[in-house]
Image (cartoon, rainbow, N blue to C red; front, side):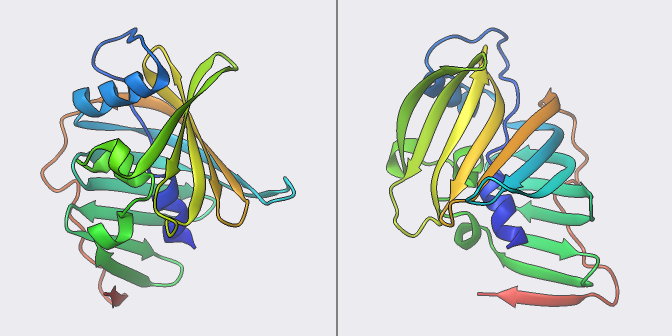
Length: 208
């Protein structure tokens, strides 16, 4: 469930290179994909069940470099780390002393993460529609074309070309809201940013 939560949330965004980008929300998303190969920042994630009751809140940091490399570090209320080197995805849970390893293609597929990390045309995996303005943001809805995607849709809110919020409704009618802050575009990333080595004594489980 933790890995699913991240991958559905992993469409986290960063500021485009040109401030004040204009156009529809879809135009802003496509511009972001073209213009921003890497970014880092902080996130807060809030999940509610189908009845609207709060279920969990997480905060942490993220960094990505397209295509396919990312690092998602949950710092509170518990530590968890998810790292992709572009080929393998590692989910490390210190509390369980376990690392789960799976292929990036199988993990991301047509999830919202593909919007950020993939290289394929958005229209090949998602139906995009404009959702108008709300709370000062331009909203875009992406519905997966695959019936096995595991979520109903994801809404992305933009302001002046900068994705600010993500709202996802999953197959169980839960909603997850993610807000991004302290965004930095094209940071100077250390060579080992997306390298993961399992700590000594930790169980490693490979999933085909």
